[in-house]
Image 1 (cartoon, rainbow, N blue to C red):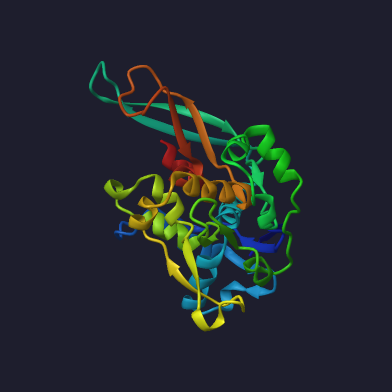
Image 2 (cartoon, rainbow, N blue to C red; image 1 turned 60 degrees about the horizontal axis):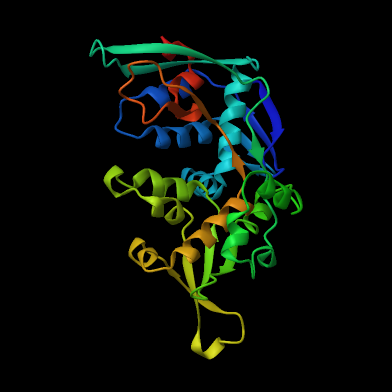
Length: 300
């Protein structure tokens, strides 16, 4: 069986196999599982080795736990490289966009051809340092956008590891909220965070969902160990987020934005005339949510 080796966003050497009929079946079975759940099974099937961990020798439970703990950016990297390796690094992805035409009231479609030869934009995992944010005013935080944000990120060391156990040490960030002075621990988005987002009903999704996917925890010092750095960790709920000052909410968002690794797999194009499906002038989609990314025959 042919394999391909590359490094994850976090630097960990990884070996994958290609897509076979088994993986096509996994993604297309009508078994009631969400596409996100099917992508997990795809990850578990194609990944051979991550660092020194032989993925295929793990039990089903160990494999599930491994990928739940893996950062989402690294999971995305594996899926992207699996697709590219399986199709001999074909430079194009052809995507069919279906919509309801307001003039004919019938389903219509357009075909988009995307050049993916240069890969997808990546932002590395940054080594957390609370002092980078500490003491910054709201106005200073607000300015951290675009080039200014990139300039700050470029000044922070990247996290590059040889094994995934090392990566896990950098997966959580600990911050003190500026208004309430609450100590909060956040987990940069991983497989567990994706599951939280995927299981949130559409009617329950809001601006809080992205933060809840980072599993926020309030740190409370144990009375007898107040000065020893030992804390009880209490999950912060949607109701508790409601009660936080908006500056504290924005502080958490900015911390995530600065340190969290990303792979941008979204693409956008101008909505066709008569499209009643799109929200606004542009259509935004994620290639990893398209079955045709993995199986081009699904384009037709």
